[in-house]
Image 1 (tube, rainbow, N blue to C red):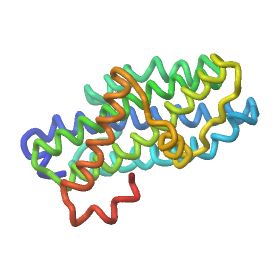
Image 2 (image 1 turned 90 degrees about the vertical axis):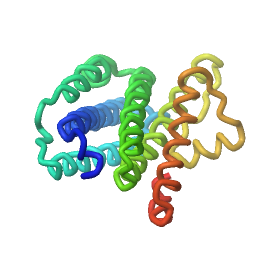
Image 3 (image 1 turned 135 degrees about the vertical axis):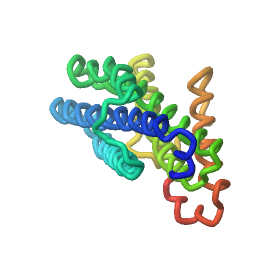
Amino acid sequence: MEKLAQNNPAFLLDVLNGRLAFERTGVKLYDSVIGKIEAQAQPRFLAIVGQLREIRAEEKEHEEWLEAQIRGLGGNPDGKSEMAQLEMEEGRGIETIICDGHSNAVHLLHALLAAELADNAGWDVLVKLADEAGDPAAKIEFARRMAEEAKHLLFIRELVVRSAETMMLGAERPLPRGFGSVAASKMKKPLLVGGALGAVLLGVGALAASALFLARPKLAPRLRHAL
């Protein structure tokens, strides 16, 4: 990370603080969704709680890792930098929907999808910055977490799609219970997405794979579990 910070350490800390602010919001969002789904006790949605807890745990790891990086660079992870303030303001609408406003599980998942799209974009920026700065070690660490966020996005997207199909077509579509079932369904039925969402999903996968397997090949074997 030191190489990435050489030119403008203040800006890097600002960006990292912004990412941290969003990750902290992400943990709160998943805590709220899980709590509301458990309180409603609908079997269809209770079945996905285990996977939501795994995602929440990865979001928490991202939060703690960012805190450590900021401290290592001499920054304050609790500081309210410009980007941290911006990220909190951007996430406030989603946080209001999930934590305060809605209880309908489909609405909650729809709001989570918006959060995951933003989360993927935030890690994408960090991967690109590390690449341009010629810091492969930082790029690998960022890309590992971006790969995890890509899985989160695919899973939440599939929940939203299956829920919409059930409501639109009148026949219940089973919800995936984990990343494995999402991947299996995509092998049977290719992922057909259009516009910005398709670009995001394909771009995230390509960038994560590139960073993990091309930036530093000798480290790739022990990082493959991240995909």
